[in-house]
Length: 286
Ligand code: PLP
Image 1: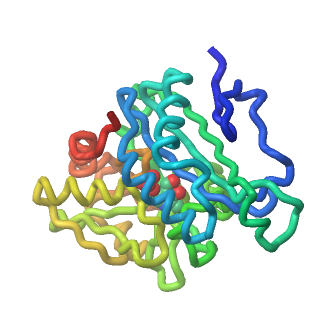
Image 2 (image 1 turned 90 degrees about the vertical axis):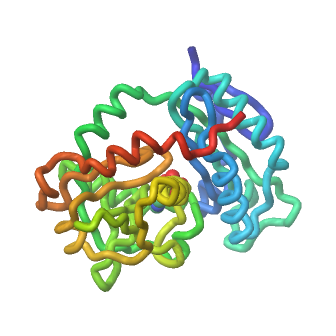
C-alpha cells in the first residue's frame, strides 16, 4: 500500500507530494507543526494539539489554513487513508509560498498545509520503553521562542545527531545556569527520593508539551505530587528516576544521563506505571 499525503487540498501518493520551492517553510522555516499520537486508530489529545497549533500560528501571525472542523476531517482522512492504527499524524502549516523576501508576503497569500501519517511498530516501541533510553546533555543554543512549535529545528536535529553518535536516544539541553530545559524533541522529568515528579515550568525555556500537560492531569488524578521547578543536570544524575514525555514517546524512562547510570540502570517503577496509565487519562478522538 502506498502512503498518502495531504497537501493543500489534495490527497496524493507520498512520492508525488510536493510544495513550491519558494514555500516560506523551505526558505525561512516560517511555519509551525504538530504531531499527535494515533492509538487504536484514535487521535490522542487532539483538542490540546489544535489549541497549541492555533497559539503557535497566532504568535507568528500566520492564518489557520482551513477551519478547525475541516482540519479535523483532514487529519482523520489522512490517518484512514494510510490505515494507521498505532502511529502518528504530523501536520505542518507555513506562511505559504511567495517570491523570496524576508518581509511577509501579501496578507491574502494562502498558508500551506501538509498532513502525513505513519504507523509505528507498537511491539518494538514497548520493548524500547521497557529497556529505557540513554540521554546526553548539551548546552541549549536555541532562540528564546521555543514556546512556539516552529519547524526551525536545526539545533534540535544537531543535538539528536550528537546523541545518536554517542549511542543515546535523546539530548537534554541545559541553560547557562546548568538547569535542564528540555529534550531535543521531548520534555524532561525527574523523580526525587520523595517520589515527587519534577519538570521545568513551561513559562520559559521549553515547549509546553501536550504529553507533559496530560501527565500532570494523570498525576493529580492518582495523587502524585508534581513540582514545576527547574532542576540541574547534577540533580538529574542523582535522581531516583528520570523520563521523557512526547507524543511520539508517551512516557519513556531514562536509564543513563551522559556517563551516569541512574539507580540500578533499569527503568523507574513510577515512570513505567505512569506510562501504563497514560491513555486512561488522555483524550481519544471520536
Ligand atoms: N519539547 C520539544 C522541543 C519537542 O519537539 C516536543 C515534541 O516534539 C516536546 C517538547 C513534547 O511535546 P508533546 O508532548 O506535545 O509532543
